[in-house]
Length: 418
Image (tube, rainbow, N blue to C red; front, side):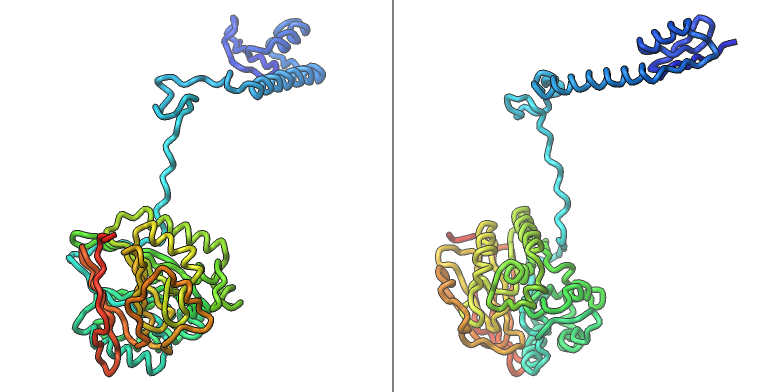
């Protein structure tokens, strides 16, 4: 009856003349089998150790030689491209196939909304989280005006909670300084939050997580962007973490050791900077705005911020950002560049903390070179903004006695006049 022969390690199998299945052997295996008197069906031949070692060494020498030949002249052994495998006509003289770039992952921390409206009204207010009389007085006027103006959302320019932020989402400041103060129905709209220097002392995770408690509170990450689509135009609003720019990366005089440690690391700043570059460069929005706590240029209070002039300022110009909204200086300001229409610098940090009537001694006014201040007033208040396809209309409003009188008005065009 048919029987299987097992000698060495078979590479392929075939059927023998007696109906047996015989392994095709390497030459040494065959030679060894012959020395044993041929193929003896039903028995297993065993190769001596010395023969195995010789085969192993010989194979290793051959492989090493092939490797040396390839390394000496690799191009000789690479199959040249043909019309079937060249793939890309722009590959160059080498004929190397150019693979398409891998798609980038979706941009993180980007929120998108679509609105059925030809324009939008929103308020800009900052540095409001004192919990004292000035905040309540400003909030009363803010609320009364909102009852008739009906903003669609509110941009907060930082310093929501003095002096050291909050400890957790259970911190009572969320109730006493935010929810109770801004409780009117007209203010039950999204509040886009960013971190101020006083906020960065506390729990950043609490700021990121409080939206699960109060749906108005919008800060999904320490930096994020919102893209709004309206009838006939789009607007991108980039909310940055200025603590990373100014304290983690820079050395601003307001950054004590505690704030530097709380703000983050240099690597976190570099990641943030890369994100800002990407979100601005990839956007095709008709309008582009950036919101940060520290000013780039300022004529009151803490003054201009060297760290932002050097890092953020060039990006605002390069990517045609229309305006930068900021707080930090407890006043209302409007500053422009002398030789460019964009960006314009909108200061709204008068929401309820001690006002800044003059520049601080530590400020360096020379950093404002190349700019012109059009408006600067150390008065509690906020900015009303109306955005349409072609213009951004801004009205700076005071806040006293439950009223919000207009202090200054300006219009920013969408298309540069340069």
